[in-house]
Amino acid sequence: MSLGLWIGLGLLAWVVLAVGVALLIGRIVRQRDRQVPDDAPGAPSSGPAEPASSSGQGIPRQGGPPDASA
Image 1 (cartoon, one colour):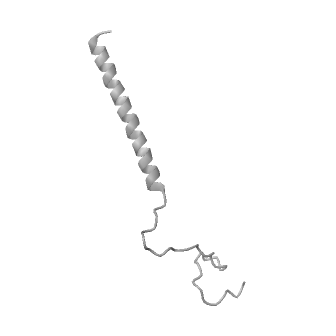
Image 2: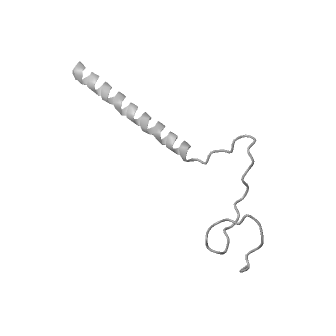
Image 3: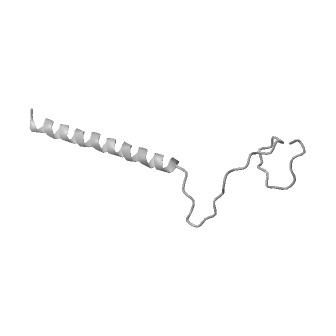
């Protein structure tokens, strides 16, 4: 094989390798961004979510008198 063909194959191999690494890094970054961020140190925790009220509005109860339908 001629020298030009070897150089072309070498360049093609580098391009394939670079694209593979770029795709791998992009996937890692996407997975990292998809994770739920940790709370800041010293920040109060939100605690478990309260169930939605039975009125069907989907608004969590904030205390107060209980629902009459319960």
